[in-house]
Length: 172
Length: 154
Image (cartoon, rainbow over the protein chains, first blue to last red):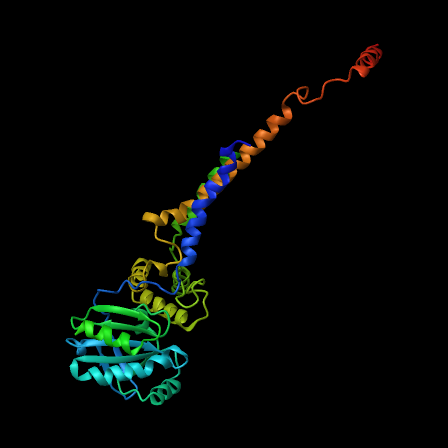
């Protein structure tokens, strides 16, 4: 068989294999958010303590908006103490930490808040409107909203104390 | 026959592409739109098919937006603005995305072309004179063949 005939199939198939190889390397969970750099969508969160927290009230503050669930183990369990520590360290420096509980039962969510002694505002998003508005597709996800109300950064997965500190300092 | 089949194929493809929504109720419209959105949790399922709570909430939001008078285009644009193009199960027809739309047709046409080429080549080979492929006649049988052919001729 002529050389060119032997090479036809490998030459035709190689670009497709390269495309597939590239596709398999990408992580389907690492979806870039189109909201980065854009104005954070407004929300009104009904807190577990009975009050309401709206994003408009927080203009001028740097906001750490954390989406979580009581069944989200181990990631949400790992980051809860770090979030509480960040709140205590930065609340007097114009930083607000807010927790939004999604796809959860109220009793389980409240038990989670009590277990980790979370003193920053937490509430439920029962119809998922806030989470959909922020393009959330899993928990935990955390949005860092700067003082101008723009989304500075989105983190997917558990946050560490160092990450929190780093991202909050960037916004101050 | 070929023209009829081709016409039917074109009509079918164009018909699917246009997909008129005239006279479709709210539930049907919700289902149609939900079928176009990818479930963020069960990513290989549509929002219409996924049993996840997130998909359920997204379906409710679609229904609410349709009730409030938003068009399907506006609702699609909303989800894309929140999740990115990835939220649509079918890629938007622009730029590099055209590869996803056209490659299957290209592959089918290419495959048909290869099959046609192979079939035509094997047919033309079978029609080619056989004498060139036959081994030379053994001289011991040449005279006997001539005699028997003469006998048959009588």
